[in-house]
Image 1 (cartoon, rainbow, N blue to C red):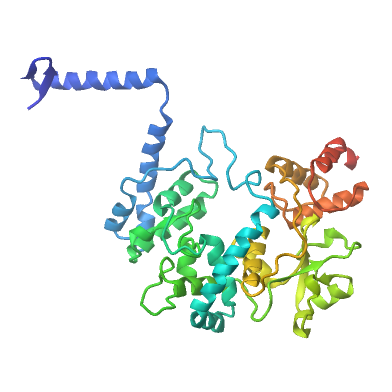
Image 2 (cartoon, rainbow, N blue to C red):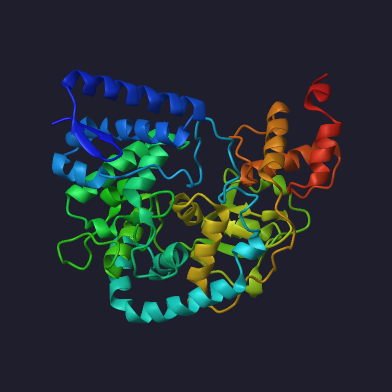
Length: 434
């Protein structure tokens, strides 16, 4: 029975009056919403729910049941606080992952953190030595390296932490800057649920990585290993599974057995820092003949001298220098960051060798992303840089900057500073072309 609410109680009304009342109520609600202005969160949530539901055919094609799809997506709403989003109608805010908020090498590679993780890693190496020996025998990756990855990724944690991975990946697939990639990762996360991964373990970082060594769903399906023989690929609670999975990924990316990741060296003053790029590789013995000196007076074996390596100067001519082998770039491919690769490699060394970097890191400030982007655009216009404009002073950016410094008669240090940027602005690329 239709009821009309009034003060003093309820009384029945006719169906025609009930319809009129509903129309009046709907008109009043819509009018109120229009007068109050736009409600982007309401609209975005409704659109998000519709978009999420539209993924069902793709999930079904990957073997996800309707029951799993409904359980995994029920009540999921976008989290607009995540980094790396491009939400329509909202100004893009600086993100914690951008260089303005990324620590300097001296801070990222902080000695107190490295020594703490190395000490913990040494104890874990003894605890898991038989497992680590089997991992190295099967995949060729030393136990100290996968321990260092575990330490860097989750501080040797044994607990599933983070946010609901379905929410994270759905948000990134909906309004992230890499929608296609994250949509595929979301579908694979749904498949993980379908394949029996406990929902409580499906917790991730803001980028959707999970487990002790931080795997995306796609990496789980490519590389996860049941190394403890219990019938499950458990990268969340099984140390053997997690470390073997990390080793399998490194091996698949090209890890070279019995080859060190890098050697700290002292570069000669005559070295042209624009040559510090992966394309310029020579046997380590040739670099030493050219004046490079291993840190701590280390004497290299004949097989080490024969390894091919390129020069890495993460802070230009300031701070430590390294001769990096192919394995350095394999670690970097695990997480595309020079500082990450240096952190993991150095911690792996420190598990056996207590000595820190012999050359200290400089205490220079990190340039803002916008300023490095401006440099990259200018260097591109001059034909000195052909890589992406990302505001990060990586190897190619540093080498291009060095080329500009040489052409302009500036001090050659291959390091971005406000002084060099000011020089570029005072000497525009267009004017230089004329």
